[in-house]
Every structure is written in structure tokens, then in C-alpha cells.
Image (cartoon, rainbow, N blue to C red; front, side):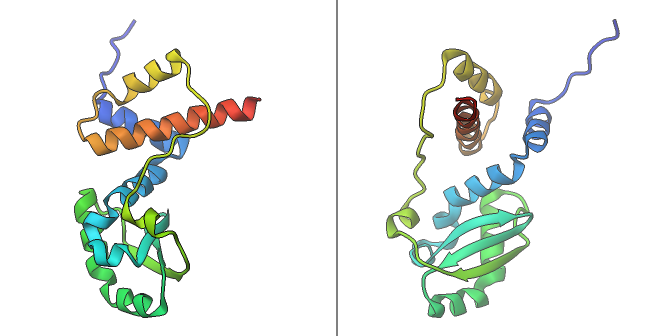
Length: 157
């Protein structure tokens, strides 16, 4: 039997995320987590990320006045978000007028999916995320995997 090729954990995780289509979702969750730090509390009170499609970030804005102001700040916002993510994840921003709860802007709070995981599923998740050095990335991946397991359980019922 030929020797098995040893692969870096980060490469394996990246491959798993890509194969399951989670890569974009993980970036999206990370943007929610760093948004206020990246843009500041003033902007965060009036605008929040609404989703990602490729490298285009959709931002929900609460008034036309703020939409006008933010349209002038797009390059700076892109730079600050990418700096906080430590990668060039965002290339462009689209602004959309809409309403949102102020509390949703103040903090990005994790809300677990309905249901509970079994011990074997929790162990599997723990093994997958154990060697990820960045705590925010590790917890984002943990939450993403928990939701995926719970969603699959719900679909089987």
C-alpha cells in the first residue's frame, strides 16, 4: 500500500467547506461578526450586512440619507471589512433601503438551531474545528456545522 499524502488541516477544512458549499456562508457569518468593529458604531446603527453573493456584499441601510453617505464611503468600507477579515473577501457593495431591528445591529448573537445534537455528532464537530487557530473562525465553523447537522435531522423527520 502506498504511503498516504499528509494534508494540512486548513486545506482539508477549506476543501470540505467548498464541497458542501459553505465557504461563502462562513465568510458571510464572519462579516456579521466584524461589521461593527470594521465600520464603527455610527454606521452600524444605520446599516448592516444582508448577505453575500460571490464577492459582492449586500448592505441594508435604514434611510436614503445614509444610503447617499455610504455610497460615497464604499471603497473605505470594503477596505475596512477586508482588513478585519484578513482577506480580500469583498470587492463591491450594493446598498439596499430597508428596515431592521436596532438590536440586530448592536451585536451579532448566535442563536442555535432548534433541536439537539447527539454526542457522536458533537465529537465529530469538535474534531473538525479543534485545530483552527482563529477563535472567531473556529466558532463560526462550529455553529455552521451544528446548524447543518440539525437541519439534516429536521429534513429526515
